[in-house]
Figure (tube, rainbow, N blue to C red):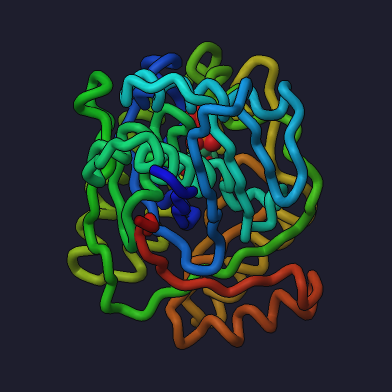
Length: 325
Ligand code: DP6
């Protein structure tokens, strides 16, 4: 293209988690996973391949990244160049509308947006399935951010068969996710390292796979029947089973901090008071609370009173990737 191509992709929150790879090179997961794409948190990336550039240039939130910090992005661009049979280096400008260190999965929106913008800028016109396969090579969770609403990532067994597909792109039931930003500190153990440790050392790993395949079917059914209790309960159980893998890894570790435990207790107390809500957590201490839209405001206020106004963000199901011409 003669001008930069821009793509916008949203983050997603996994209700059935991906936590382990069968193939670390191609990023083939150990199980099917299922997520909801989130409206408020997204990444916008523009890419242009230019003959005059000697190296790839990556500008992240206004600042040029060092070679070390842009390594994953440049590796990803090489993949796109190979696919498109081009050699030009690229100028990449990316802006995150996600609290980056808040555990809101910015690598998901980041690599989804990069896949969309880079592939189109390289002259490839990929359909969404192939785009999800490409995004997968950057970060597993990015596979699902190509689509909106509820999305499944089919495990598959190779590059061809491991991709995302939509389950319900525009849910007609009123759902919300409340993100609690309990710390802005960068996570200590990345998901990439944490999940590999679980695969290699947790004695519970095989059981996790069995349980999460069952959870996958249950959450799919819950979505089909718009059964909020089943969706929330199963998602919360699945998240805790994933976190049991960190505790049972060697060396053992946890993403929980004191505030995470406190917030979990608050969610359970709200349930006892008859307010339906459930939590899930990724590779960081921040909780995401799943609730019905009509309850979102008062649940958020309850947490704001404890953790502060700015730490509590309400979001709804979001749309899939969009790419400029
Ligand atoms: C806990 O997609 O960040 O958010 O594929 O190594 O880049 P890599 O890992 P990543 O892992 C996400 C883990 C998770 C669960 C999920 O999103 O399914």
